Length: 276
DNA sequence: AACGATCCCTGTTGGC
DNA sequence: TGCCAACAGGGATCGT
Image (cartoon, rainbow, N blue to C red; front, top):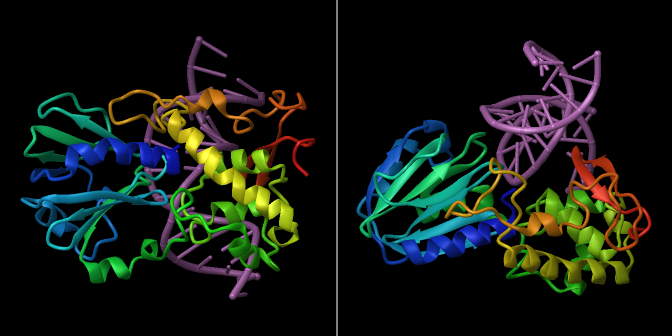
């Protein structure tokens, strides 16, 4: 699934390809994919003949700064993929947007389930979007645990659900939230406000290492539907997952069978002895 | 205000 | 073996 490590992997592939490049052609195959900007039909015009300044990321959102103060926002949803191809090269099924640069390269947006989107915003429009107010980036701006403590206080919601809340911290999805909770020894269904100071410290401390491990292995590819690197390779963190998708299998730490329960409508995987 | 449920979408999976 | 319902999930939105 595209969560922070997957989106950051995509960003690192896109940055050298796009930064300084000029966009020379834009094709939109599936109109649903361009949404959230006030007039979606402006999408092509806003990209065309514009140069890319920098490829950024906040949580799971790619935020690409263009010359002329426009921001090209891309969210991969759950099945969105970016592919870098030579012009005229093969197009996977569900290729909904193709952007060509003056470097003889195409950026393909492929998304079978169309939960992903892209759009180009002026600064005013951007500010009016919900993603302009995301929580701190889980990799680059994670607050120290002393600053997280008051944000948990009195919260009855399951800690797992809070970790998935992009306005609390931006970047964790269902897989990495479960992995972070396993690493910190906390049950996913614990009410957020009941965590001890030490537990919050553990939780805070687990986020960076888990995300960096995912990043180091190119992210998690469950299958070729959900996520692949822009060059088509699979992310290799899947084999290293401690709990996600491993119901009934032995915990890699102590051998206890991994449990699956539904929390906040999301399947959650955890070890009943490691996590308290 | 906080939290849970529902919806969007389609390829894959599991049960009969 | 074949069919079809259930499932997967990020985020917006709605209802309680």
